[in-house]
Length: 449
Image 1 (cartoon, rainbow, N blue to C red):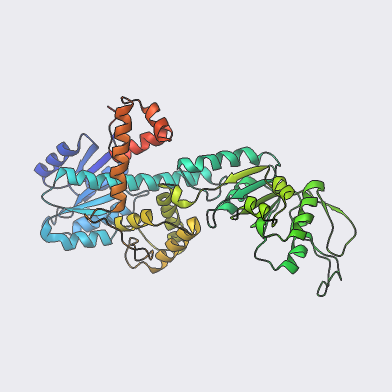
Image 2 (image 1 turned 45 degrees about the vertical axis):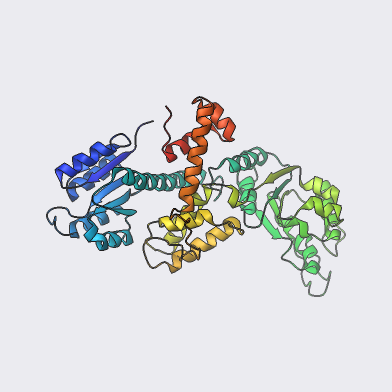
């Protein structure tokens, strides 16, 4: 695998050579000594990471040219992550640069090992954002907003692709906020029915005395207030897909009527006598334990097996690893664009807080917090306070994210040693795919030798 490119913007020839020598093992290093050369290098080489000395000619003793260079770099499409290099006495400049969109800063004299850690983090974040953009391009019109690269999501994507081409009823199960409706929409959009309606009804949000009419429709005069004949949601979904959200909340009498429709593909309006043929595929979802509900007599066993010909479990966000970073970045880009806010990502502390949070509300909670942060943020990068999350650090000052990375690194190294460097056997031991393991090794700086 080729080394990632790194652009070093530094007007001091000796320091430039020293940095190139120190970083050449890990990066394909490109050099620039002023703003014009830096912008030309960014456009020609597309480096994911840049180190930038703020003191550039013609004002090497000040920072104006460095700030102008930073601003110009950020205007480039898919701009690189910029790490500002500055003297300790110019720390205020560095903090200002971070506020204006730099990823981080590093004080002289430069310690190569410490700088490598900062650059590795910046490279990881750049690749995460790039991966998100690619996923959005690749998934456009297919998986809606279902983003994810974790092994836990692979069975979900595979199941959607398989069931979409059939007419089999599908039951999607998972905690509240995991994205069950997105799965249902993906099944519909990838199916032959994609040009017909996708009709949704939340079975737990409509009063029981109105739910029957909402689902099956009614005739004029069927009950007080029924002034005209009205189609129900099932009939409206003719030719397309009916999505029954929180199907476990259906009262027993309506479970019987739904079962009859699923068996016969025919229904009667409330107050009607004529049977109406309806061709609608049913996709249902629930966050309840339907098997427990069956044992307690609250849900019909025959209906369960009728709607659950194919069951797709959706994992909670806390089990999806680095997908939380991917989703947070996607939500930030979307809501910043909608709100016309120029935001340059999350601070390291915010990313650590996102990783440490348990996300009981799953993807819905994550999106709501990011949406709020976009509105409330005062700087150019989202902080833990913007997300209403606590800053989380370990007792020795390391972020929990760093501690997790150390644990992952040690676990992978031990498994590689046990398997004598065989990546396939190591991946099998760790329960991940080979591409996932290669990605982790690269992210954690683990060589293949």
